[in-house]
Image 1 (spheres, helix red, strand yellow):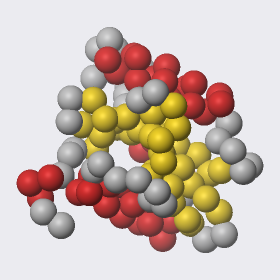
Image 2 (cartoon, rainbow, N blue to C red):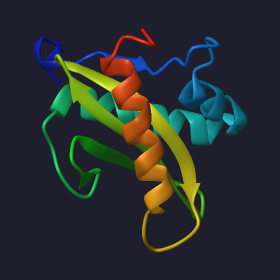
Image 3 (cartoon, rainbow, N blue to C red):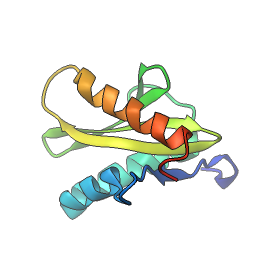
Image 4 (cartoon, rainbow, N blue to C red):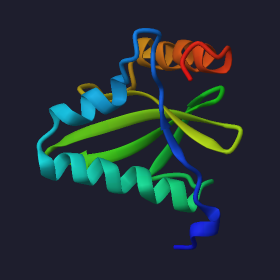
Length: 118
């Protein structure tokens, strides 16, 4: 992988200073955290890419898809100004991504763009 193509991954930070995706990652066990981290790094080096590792959800929102054990993890992100903004993360419980998860990521992206979180 060529480092010249790497886009930096930036954690969304809310007004109170918390970083929801980083906090979610800390709840995972070490092996799962490593898997998700490797998948994010893969996207950083290979962007733009598509399925099966990445899927476009809606508008500027994309998801990194990670298999952790017998579960499926998702990290929702957007690429703004050549940065991968990590907006929301969860373990998927249903076949389709919950629209509320996409809406939350979209809301956080708007906050990021408006300068409230960086």
